[in-house]
Amino acid sequence: MKLVLLGAPGAGKGTQAVFLKDKHGLAHISTGDILRQNIKDGTKLGLEAKKYMDAGQLVPDEVVMNMIKEKLASLPEGQGFMLDGFPRTVKQAEFLETITKLDAVVMFKVSDDDIVKRLMNRAVCRSCGAITTWEHDKCPSCGGELYRRADDNEDTIRSRLKVFHEQTEALIEFYRARKLLLEVDATGMPEEIFERVLSLLNHD
Ligand code: AMP
Image: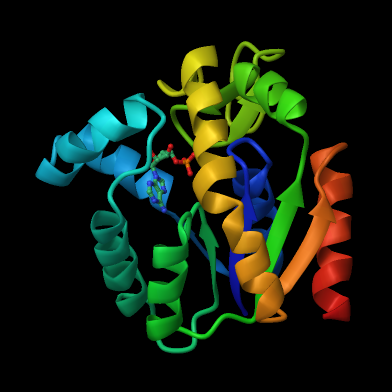
């Protein structure tokens, strides 16, 4: 299975990707995670990307398109995958069509108000990368230390939402026209949302 997980920042793409990875053995490819790793490693790419990320803006198309091309080429033959956070522009989506053929695009629908609340309450585990909330004082999965992502502050969240509406939302029509779009109500508990995703994928 070759999937794209589409939705605003904080819609739950990363959380659902972990469930799908466990259930279907799909590779989880998150452009945001790859970029953050580059920042951590102090690479040239990381240095370039950081200024856009801190401002809640998109990293230039060419940079992420090259990253995805390399990543997909490195997967073993026949390995299914989920793209989380890519594509984010029509240009990226058009490029993706030239390098792979998708089976489905799952669109996670949540209101802007919910997104702001969720991101303000999002905590990430430094050890295992689990996504959780500040109701916990350490990671519920592994006991690791929690941190807040640099871009999870109210100003940057507003910019990221604006970017989503201006540049990424157009992909809903793009994929609907290609009959690849599956829309899921992404409100409620992660486990409930996962059930909805599975039933959509099974009926597809
Ligand atoms: P995410 O972890 O998916 O929320 O991404 C965090 C940040 O990384 C975004 O706000 C962008 O600055 C950058 N980024 C991630 N994926 C892309 C992409 N496909 N195109 C452009 N920028 C991206």
